[in-house]
Image 1 (cartoon, one colour):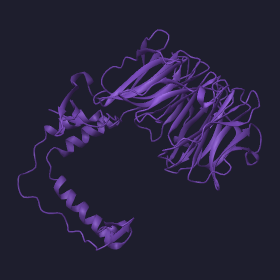
Image 2 (cartoon, one colour; image 1 turned 135 degrees about the horizontal axis):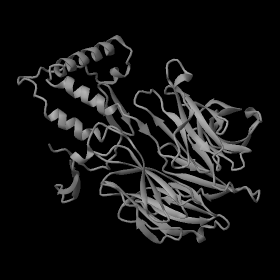
Image 3 (tube, helix red, strand yellow; image 1 turned 45 degrees about the vertical axis):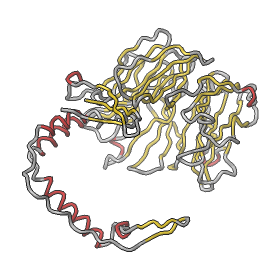
Length: 463
């Protein structure tokens, strides 16, 4: 059995590692009976044409956009009946469905975040509708439930998401969301007491919560009526009286979020020009010096994603570098002429940048799979993070002052696996692995190359 995947990155999800097993099983199924396949039900076309900027764009199926009209409903029913009449006759379909159900009914677990020696993460068991927030006291601790949304609503439609954790691991901010709503309500949990504080932010579209290390309050972004804004909430105060910190003058087409540096000294603010931001503004405030909010960059039409390590902000940007590069700015002297390039643009595209252990961890897309390089703060290359196979890395988690780092890994045949890495020694250990009814070692994955018509070498994976 040969499975071919080419071009884009191996974007592995829970279903991607099912590919090998599902197609192997499907290959063993008998073919449907030979014969002429009847044509599908006819679809009416209209002579509808839009002219945009002088270009004629036909749209003959626009009538199908009205999904509640009797004609559209009749068309959908006819198409479904036609499809089922063909698929239901396929021998082995029941066995394939049963096997896929077995493969998909597995636990899921998220990347852990360490705070104060405690490890916070989200996990959903195979028989649960919604994931649960857990904590481990130390690496060897048992999984302790912090917030379980499953019993909180009769329809099990309430989900929980981790927003932030205080530096000492004593206070956790989490959001509760009903169904597919964009809005969440923000709650605060006293981790030791397993009880919520009275402070609750009402349902709204929030963009991040960042707790102060001293746990006296937190910053948060919210999509207010007039546009996105950053507010500060003091614990115990009335949320309706929260102070607006940033955002005046920005309209609803922008996205604004803020976060604190690990030590709480600096507030870092991003302004995105839309969800597919081709331009980003970055601001900071030195809270220890009670300084004003100052721009890092707000006048360059490029993307900038910033994170703080010590007194420097590291910028992942496509400015003068389509494949990405990393710049460092000293927040005590942020003048542009003193910016320095830490990691220059290379042959491979930079996908993400993470800071941990005083190091800069750069995840590259190289030949359609992940490669993670470790640099020191000056930009000196130190080593590659050894990955278990050709696949995708996601969710690198760590702190600037800690030598511990976690990352998730998946491949065509390896389900979500989380590794812990010591940045001091380079040693890696398994932190969590999804148990699946599939032997990954029974499969082999090989990357080969072929030439396109124009001579371009294209990567291809054989499973």
